[in-house]
Length: 281
Image 1: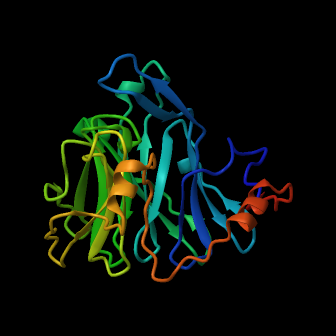
Image 2: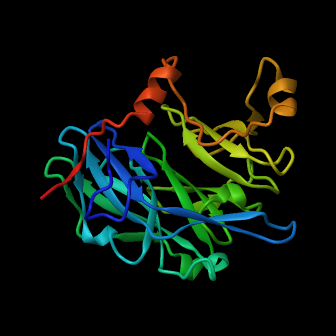
């Protein structure tokens, strides 16, 4: 599918499926990277610009709103459990790469009506980056509608590159929030996902060697009490955690075995045949 059009700033990037499977929320965000001199930090990815829209997979239409096509940088969409709200991160306009170390993202939400296919009329800010002096990214709502887990760091958008990046938990009923001290470490925690029953979550951490991300699992009860995390078990842990030059990113749960034909997928990816999306009028 060709998602770039003459009216939008680029092709789709970070996405999230709506619970009903018809819609996908996408950011449009060409990414660049800044490299540090020294050993304290190595790399800082950042968006050159970023908007957000919805794709209707039944009609191949992009559904836009001027509220998410501004000078601000909107990214990392995620739907609420009932599909009525979209959580996302948003940063004020900044000059890059000169001000890359002062970029901070707020945590925001906007409504979306699947019946009328219209966005809400306002953007609500849950956590304001300027007030808090922190950056909030990668929101993930639990499937039972109780919690919102997100990453908090000093600045930037990709927590995987920030040693101070931690996981935080917000109660969606009361707005109360806390750092997940039970699972956080002195290195980067990021890329978390919920199980379908909302009693488990998986996340990546660099606590092992400070360089490679590994997967950790932890449980959570109905009151938000979190258990001690443990490294994803492997039949051959020495091979997968000590001898391979592989890092684990963006994990998610599945209820069934994934039927994945690499050859067919490669043919689809590199094929010239594309369905051109259109803008919803």
